[in-house]
Image (cartoon, rainbow, N blue to C red):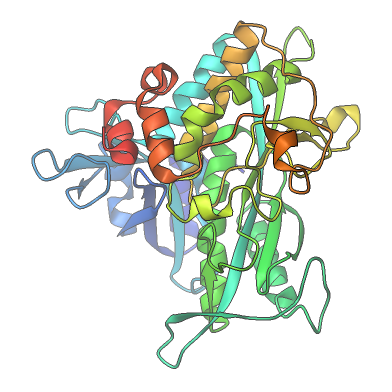
Length: 403
């Protein structure tokens, strides 16, 4: 259910809500929040709540540090891991300067503008996320170790899979928050897990991805564990990906998916630093089903983009290069802009690459373009990209690339 501001205030009164968390993300997608009391909620909706943003990455530093949070009432959820009595709710926020104009580096607003651009062209996108993570044991102080919670493998079951009940708890909690998981299972690495979401509009999908991380970390901590979303936490085992499923519709009903694939392939190198923002990200790419080349095909999991087997109503493209360190708002915005460029220019992808890229000899790969192989290369590629400068503000590019 999506609430209005008036309905939120009524809900808070009737449901004995004692704390309202106003949530937002820094430029790298790390969730932040400030808690307010119910008496401040009306002011939050009318004028916003001031914060000191001087220590928040990408938000302008000490000189212009006063910013305002404006809660989006449609994102209201009750946090199920908090007490029933004196409960806690959360809303995501848009961010402005004191004079009311939008903060350029607010990634949620950047995604909103991308969606609006698509809608003006009569095009709508839907995104579904498949996010992998590791569960590690903690030490006597509760700090994370790098000892996996179990030694199970891909889609194993209990008792080898010790994460089964953890995933169940996560999925039930997500449902309480209105986020619909589709499936969950143990992944290839020891202690590695995956939970997939149902499709939704881009903004909801990005909000849900941020919420998912919070839920996973909270459930893990309640069970004496630590959840790790880094791209490659264990050197000798599979990295963790953020596989992004993309579908597109147009009022004219023509098949736009080939143009979407072509547009993403054309701009993927430019976007890579925003999809893979860590040094650790480049230890993952090109290994253990993580793509290293700019290719596509049907079903083949060694490709950058694959078209999963599905009926016509569920046809989609799956981008496999992104990892959980990415800011989903920026990732989805750039994918929309790249797709729109492919549609506008009527680009078509090259011939499908129907080989196993991981098992192919080097000579067979010579004709394929590689993704950036290091963070430095990805930063340089983005800095030199007119596509990136056209669609992202300077503050964002500087934060990621040091431009």
